[in-house]
Amino acid sequence: MSRIAVLFSGGKDSTLALHKSFDQGIKADLLITLKPENDYSFMFHKVNIELTKLQAEAMGIEQEFVTTKGEKELELNDLERVLSESNIGTLVTGALASEYQKGRIERICAKLGIEHIAPLWHLEPKAELEEISSRYYAIVTQVSAEGLDESFLGRRIDEGMISMLEKINSKYGINIAFEGGEAESFVLDAPLFRKSIAIRKAHKTWDGKTGQFIIDDAVLESK
Image (cartoon, rainbow, N blue to C red; front, side, top):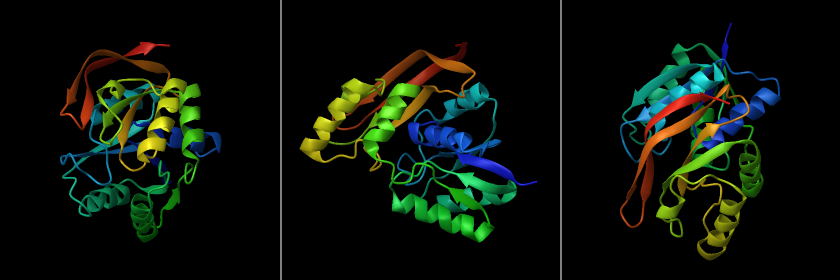
């Protein structure tokens, strides 16, 4: 019997897509996570990616964790390989607006005979953030766009942040849902989490333009 998988980075988009698919009766039994060795992968997140293992444990869903060199286009071969080897019938992704990512995933799925489901596709950015703010505990773990400074690192995505992002959007034209690579996020708690993730130790990096919130130590705690 073929499996239902989610391409899972641990960020707000893939986590929300997982939940929306569950709400539709599409219950994933596998998380597929690719860890790029390259800091500038066009397809996959790297910051705190190892901690997706805690998220998988919190949800009680099996995870396939694969390292990829993260080289443009070539990294897609690694995705294709893991999909073909894992007996996947349906793949859920958190594609929101990026034709680059969605198009490449759909080509791989078509080649392998896999159904691709993108529950967030063309979801209005503010609507997505408001749902994340109300039902999830997600923090910003990387910023790399004008208007986003060190103060955003490690902060929860809440109503206050949404208001700030709208003001920055008015001035600089950023995508407030970060679909242009402006920022990355990590989910510490969500409805399907049986336990929440507690950060014990973390640090920030900042070079004046870009920065990261690196979680050095985290554990699962009872909710």
